[in-house]
Image: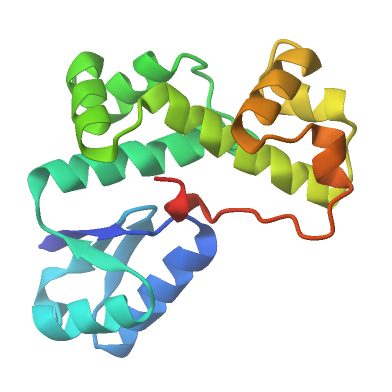
Length: 188
């Protein structure tokens, strides 16, 4: 038997490692660890309150509310959606989320907007811009290459979105001393 726990603020491979190590230190056997979820062998589940406290001390939160779980699943799936290294084949957000969560997109969209105060589409734009900031900081690619890598049809489209979100052009951002990137779990 296995038990799945949903965890908030789990947005990268480092987070997965921290959660896994923390639970294993409590005696749990982690069967699977994905963004936003950890599957534990049922016979090794630590005390819930102890598990909650340990995870909170590391910046994570156990989620029990059904709608909160859906929101967290939307967020973690969208983080994968915008990550060019994940090679997500579907480029349509609504089709991707509907398939990933096996739910009607309009219901997901309404729930997300109502609880987060931002549309899924705007959230995706913010995620993409944070990823673009990362590429600019790495300084490995030109702006056109970044636009192509992130799935934009043109570098001018990316440039407009970047300026709309940050208030800066990509060149202005590149020349800053303090880049001020947001962690992906801090976007909404």
